[in-house]
Length: 138
Image 1 (spheres, rainbow, N blue to C red):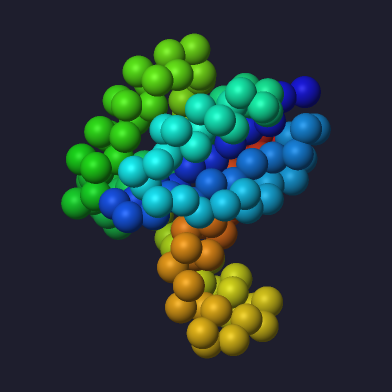
Image 2 (image 1 turned 45 degrees about the vertical axis):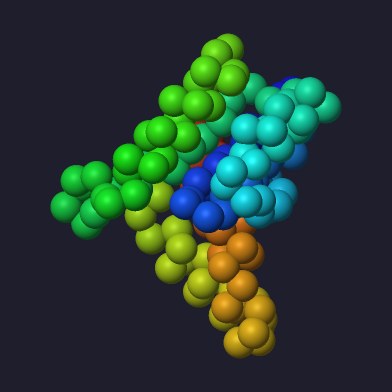
């Protein structure tokens, strides 16, 4: 069974998470510099079977697009051009960073590790993916 990949794209960093081959569990894969996202994904797709990609859709509390929407929309265009056959699912990413930070606290990470924004991005991508998997099973 192919994997599902999740992308938490940002101006500087991009968090990436992926499912196991049975599409049951989401795990953080890595955080990369955003400018390398397409080349990283090209290499990853060449070695792993991925069926679809979730890309976070930033929204404000009222449901309106956030200030980072334009940056992410530009990435979605580049992604679609580079991988025209790949199915893209946009997912609401509100609160994922806050949830990621709380997860870090709950897991006992020290203050220095909690300040690692790259880890926050990776955990955020994992939360988006696990939430999608949970909703898919209901």
